[in-house]
Length: 235
Image (cartoon, rainbow, N blue to C red; front, side, top):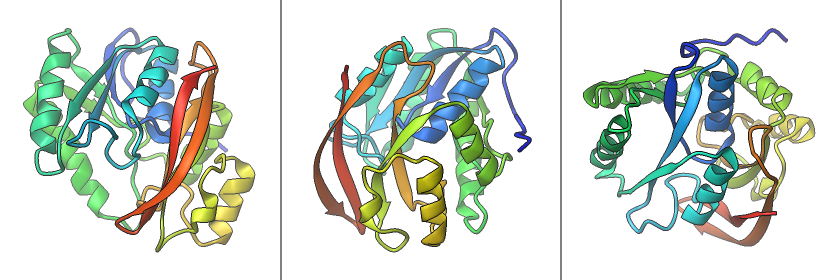
């Protein structure tokens, strides 16, 4: 499959990556670095308690291990959904103070989910308000091409959240490989997860300087979603 690469940065441009710890932001970072741009910092917004990341539910310790493996600093803010934008802008101000004015995001076009256009508008608006430019290298690739690129780039992602109305919690803990992708499709679930069907955590990618070990815990339920508690450690 021919995989388009769109909205990439110029070579040697330093950039921050909006980092969830999942597969899409990781691929966006990999594609940008492959094109010659220079990843300089990761940026994550945690929940208001500061203990778990929004949506993916990853601990700060796990996110820090990923950042260490990439050899990058991690900028973190904590916020409720109501205060998310203010916290995001505050984090961008810190990053801009490092001399970085470009950001990479892992969002993509999602067929049947027009709300993602509003999210892109939000990303571009807040970036512009902070004096920065947003880059979305996955945006027009299409879901099949994104998944193919993830596999080609040897990004190992494990499913850590499933939404009950979309997919069985039996997929929790599964590696998103070719077999899993086909099983998700057979179950009428979009394997990209961009409609909120699932979230992942990256446990391996060629850019990691060392291997990570994943420790699994209990499965919990919240707002119609099931979460697998995981911890990432230096192996």
